[in-house]
Image 1 (cartoon, helix red, strand yellow):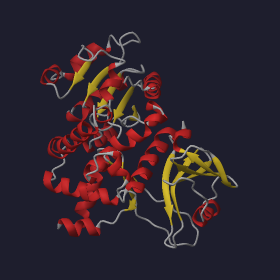
Image 2 (cartoon, one colour):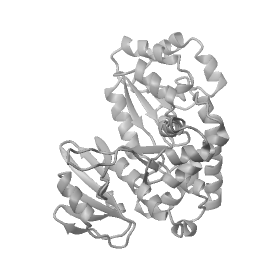
Image 3 (cartoon, rainbow, N blue to C red):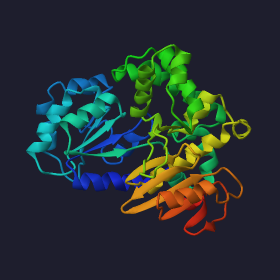
Length: 383
């Protein structure tokens, strides 16, 4: 199966055309290097993989090497690619100087696994000089609606989705989780014992789609609440978890102020839940929450809102997703149901949040109205 990620290709080319440097940030094995290889020959003189000892040696004198390569920059040769750039934080001051020396766009394409080191260095040294594009695994826009069930079960990591069987996919994801806690996090400068992080990650699977409360996991793991919050931030910064923040309105109502937790890849979620097949997923009591998180990620990637939140009050009114796009306020509810209907909570959200539209996304096939400015929309119809 040949997957052409046209939207991302166009986004990267557009960014290189208007910005001096572009950062592709996302988890390992999400396809960053493959995307970059469509612009620059992988392994050539303009490509540096900082996990490769040979390329590390080539960059011992980065100012000299990169200055010489940049002199040949042009549309025919493409940008200079530095893969896993967060592994050499000392490069960022050099890149800042080089970027400032020339007004030319498309000088550098930096690939990073969204580590805290990458985010910190990029924020301090390259602020205003780089354009950041977030890269995830496959989505339904790239695969087509016929593959949404397999994408939900296996997740979007290319090697997981394209595996020869569900068993092979599960084995790859199991190893990926193990590598992340044993190798990636220490490499990123995160000093959390691997067994403790793995137990926390498994525990976090039970919070998927729920409001975060640090007290229970802290008590179960016999650590402090600030410690588990820090661990949650680590998994958020490495694109394993999404903390969807709450939205507040001055409504005279008590509103929820803690984030909701979602796994960004449902394949990893299902691995930590011990769910290897579609039959076992459909029979699992957390199947609905899993599908909600899957659909939420698809909506965020396809809609590309300016900002996104959830909203809830302590009286029970809530909205799964509040999107801001320009001056518009769009509400989204997710229902794994055959024929969702309007609820009192939706009507309260329409009124209190002054929504322009409210869409109820569900896994069916028909699009139909639910009320004024309210509509049920199949997930596949988002395309």
